[in-house]
Image 1 (cartoon, rainbow, N blue to C red):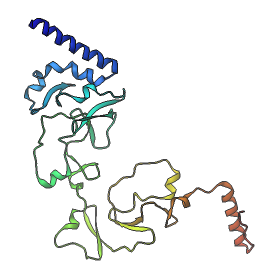
Image 2 (cartoon, one colour; image 1 turned 30 degrees about the vertical axis):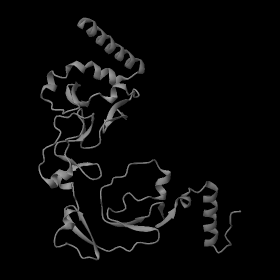
Image 3 (tube, one colour; image 1 turned 135 degrees about the horizontal axis):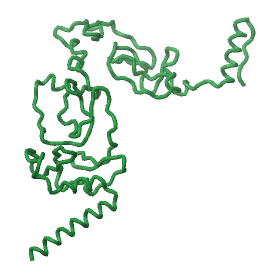
Image 4 (cartoon, rainbow, N blue to C red; image 1 turned 90 degrees about the vertical axis):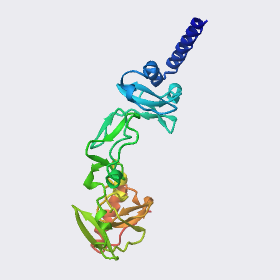
Length: 272
């Protein structure tokens, strides 16, 4: 009787694998391959907790929920199945990482955070839990509020502005550049402008609408007035997007002719 049940279980397992292959579920095939190895090798010291099971993947101990939703979740060939609060989703496979980051097979659960530099040398609460592959900050770097990996001294560049007593007057803006506090007279912003503590390096400009899009560095600089949301900088003013349109060749020619005629006192021509 036991032999019959044992063979029945094996047949059901084989059927599950075949169905996963038919669906193209590559992650399911990969995890099923390690299903019976949860008590061997790298998983011997893993403490996954109740409701989780350790499965070695790519030589790393990874804690996965039981049952694992990714076993029956299909992703494209250039994607991996991952979990967010126990729910499966597809994410692009990592091919490269930003500056000061490297790909970590166990994810970034225990990477350095700028918050840790304030709270003290905290121990990572999930050292045995291997998350999904992702980019993590290199040793000696910490993730800041903008998502960048920076050195500890760059975690809070404006921290000196919050010293007691305040280094600047109430009517002045405080900024830190190269480790030095700079007190800047209060700015009075013009029409369609607003004050920004981080400066105007990422301000929307008309000239950028016709160029190839590039990622703006969100590193804070000297405070400045910037165009409000929905406005773009053009010739010093903040205008709506429709006024940013690139002039056609005919309009440029007519505009140039108008300027020349006006310079000689002639009546400027107008467009019909």
